[in-house]
Image 1 (spheres, rainbow, N blue to C red):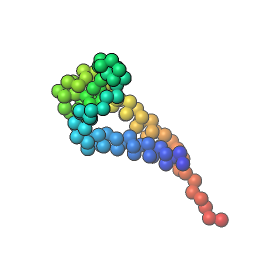
Image 2: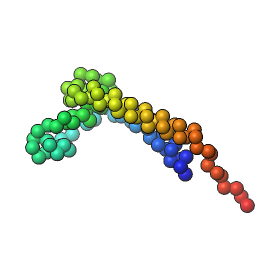
Image 3: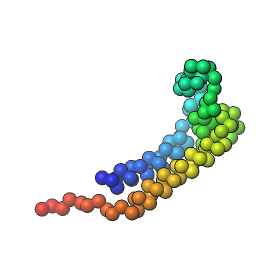
Image 4: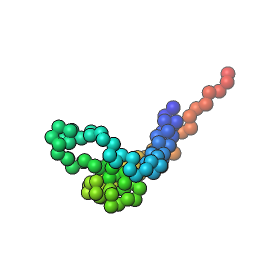
Length: 107
């Protein structure tokens, strides 16, 4: 059970960047939904406003648009890639260390 769960986690980690590349860079642009409490209650943008759109544009190598939405993407995107790499490496090591799952033998 644990090995199959780990394999599913590895698959999800590998599939997520591909899914983001499959979506257009403008997927999160101008959705009309305000999720930021600072923007919703006080009409003031916080330091994180626009980071989702910026990361999506950075993921599509659209540097100018990414920086337009939030300058912090220059630090946030590499940090996200590094965390993704660490998760993938850890999951991969666990998959190699785990013994094969026992199979049920007919009696």
